Image 1 (tube, helix red, strand yellow):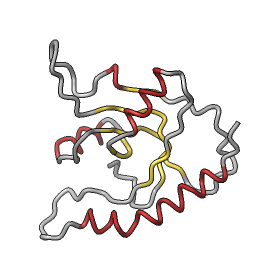
Image 2 (image 1 turned 90 degrees about the horizontal axis):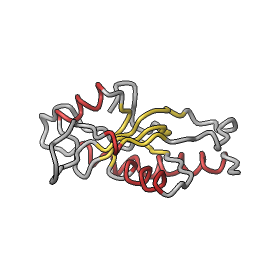
Image 3 (image 1 turned 120 degrees about the horizontal axis):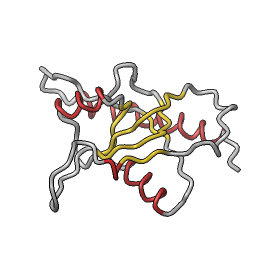
Image 4 (image 1 turned 60 degrees about the vertical axis):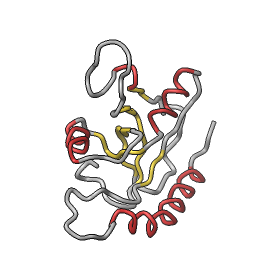
Length: 146
């Protein structure tokens, strides 16, 4: 998503945003709903022993794949990556006063334009998932949870 994020990078979320809400009541609002932004307090996590480089920042969540328009908007907002579940998980944890740590691995990046009739994103996802999972498990093993 963000231009400095590459495949196989790991992201630690400190804020999540729900970006594709379809509002079915009341007046339509802005693209990012303030009530669906969640700041994550990660002060309870000791990351000093983590040897893998972490990108720390925002993750955007939706219930559909990214379009070219949503990609541009997310990049302007400084969102590092997009997924389908982080914002929901973060919001539920916030509402229930539960500590939350969201680490995401980047397996694939949607092409801005794909002139080939090949689903490069799916190929990357299949190739990189095992690598990302191993990195994530390695990170979790390095964190002394309180």
